Length: 394
Image 1 (cartoon, one colour):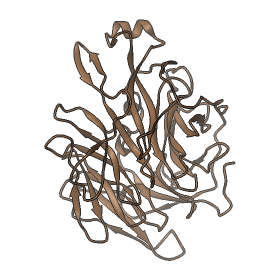
Image 2 (cartoon, rainbow, N blue to C red):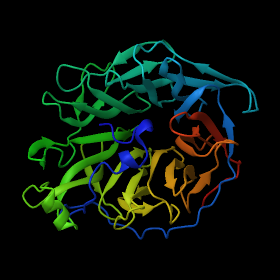
Image 3 (tube, helix red, strand yellow):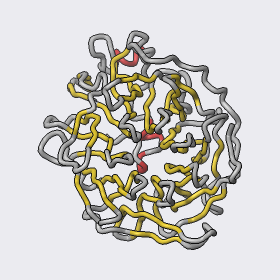
Image 4 (tube, one colour):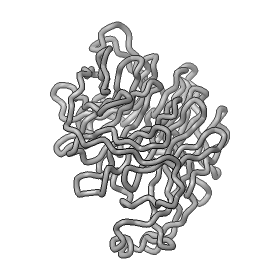
């Protein structure tokens, strides 16, 4: 915990968990759809604009509030940007509140300007009201504040994960006034695994929540593996089963839907009010250069977003209420932000002129914008892409 936070998005983080297969006996809801054929890369017509300061945009709302982090000589600070005027090349203002922890970042924002965030130095999730300046740290399941606040909905309910008294991370939500963490109870999260003779629980996480209170995330369940020799050698068996990352949703009424993978593993990372889930899945048997690719689920059916054939890793981080999605993929010699408008195949967003890569987290179909960063991960530059009014990937 956390899995694919903005600063942990390249191959070292993406491949931190073994590649296994989902069990056919898990009772998955829905079926696996035919994956989209691997496409050639298509460059989007969306134009990049630079925001002031170093850092990156991690989310945005339809009112034009862009949140994330800015970087200066004292570290990485949670911040947001506002814009005035018709020209995105000027008119930006950056706001840096006094969050008493560095590094810190905002991770999501709702329509009311209330933000969820995370302090990496303190390992604490928090909620910040940009209208009042009120800051609330989110408790865990024990007596501390080891929590991860990834997403916030219109009612101010936050989704993420929190640790119990044994230090195990489990999917969680917090409701205003945020006095306690509530367990989501994802399937399979209590299984014990073994690594180098040590037993531990790997838990679960909810990285998405919609306005109806349905959460999307991933959990660790057991399943028979394809690569039997590797897993026998590494001694990570548990009763002939091994850990499997599986995407799931859980509604406010408690109905759990386990989401199938294109091949083996999958994670859900965001969900909109129509129930469209986006995240990442394996396209096929893993190779030295191809693992996770961006995926989406409609009505319990998994679909590939159509990452280029030479994509190494990728994930869809966010989905708007109108069905636009964004994220990033690794290519052989660079990384690219992408945009997908609910149909067809993703298109790749070019970085700012003079920069060698792009990545994105925020998306608004109302504003026809994608938000993220340009440049290397070590020194990102906040970037917003403006797409044409008639833009579509379908």
